[in-house]
Length: 460
Image 1 (cartoon, one colour):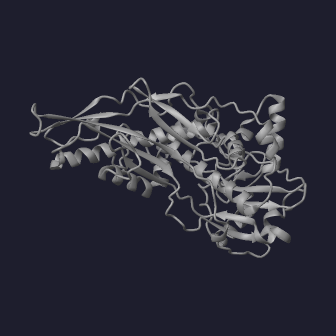
Image 2 (image 1 turned 90 degrees about the vertical axis):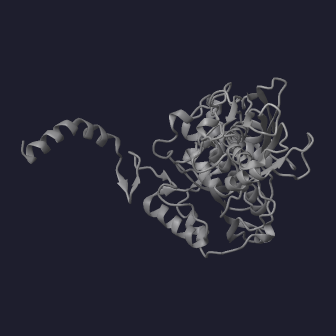
Image 3 (image 1 turned 135 degrees about the vertical axis):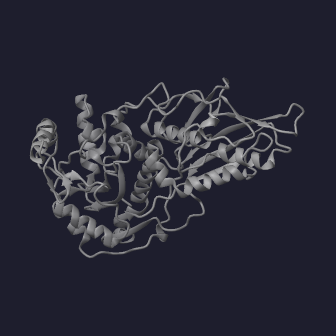
């Protein structure tokens, strides 16, 4: 068979496949997929990274204009549409998942001080994260309108030692926000305890076993409990936003009309239980090492473990909204609806999750039967402090930037936006309620440490 015959044969075989593929691909402009009706798509981190400086934001706006990408979400119009949809009894996927946005980077204030004013959230679609439910935005409104509220969660001891009890504070139990906090907290503890493997992150359990194998088993207690928790790092005082346009006249001159978030600092902290109590500040070396490595690679861990990435997106959303209220100094559009009229369909997180306690058996000459048993327990949670120091925010004013951002905005702020291509994935459109989605089997089994250092797989 000559080369031409082979080629024709391959084309004949691949023809139907190629035809199917061709029907699935929409026209593109500048490398960005377009919808069949040629409506704007949401700007995606797959095509360009989120801007962090004034210059990058100008380039970002220019590209969105050139390639007809949408990066603005009207809070006023979103509230109107969700309210109307709930009245009719059905909220579309486009509305439920914020029209494709799941990573917010700032805000623009429209017509400050007027009754028909609005706020545009600046955002993007990040394909490495889950769809962001509109329920999360409603929860952010509730947190910011109740002074002193701090979203938080923890996993506490239950009467049944095979389980831990979920505790949620600062947000409604029946909220997607609560689901995400518990889910991310549990996944972090799975990683710490070696129940879930990540080749780029060494677990606390493996670190502990290595320490024991190096001869630190003498005088080892029967067990220990460490807690880890997500939070904003209190010692990080660097600005995490920049003001690109000031308000006009009166109090507006001391506020921001355009603000860009530049950082999203989140840390994992740890503490060791001493005599059954926390608060001494004592930390286990291995727990501290795990927390430090986790913090350094937080963004990458979030991309590999979706629930943690979703938690980081909530930290960012809350920070954007806190800046909007504290630095933008405007009433939040649609506030009455989000606080009084919005109806959630979240059932909340599971009330109990399987315990992640691990038992380590060590061959030892320091015990009468040659074996030392060491139990590793875990506690902790999530804490999401709210606040911003407006005096520490740098300013990089850009002339005519606001006019450019708003120049194609209809008077009613009613532009149409489609969700991003293939968004949201069907597998992510409904969260599991009564079972924990990321739990992988029984994790209470013992870990035997022989004279040969075991692999992570051998610790199950």
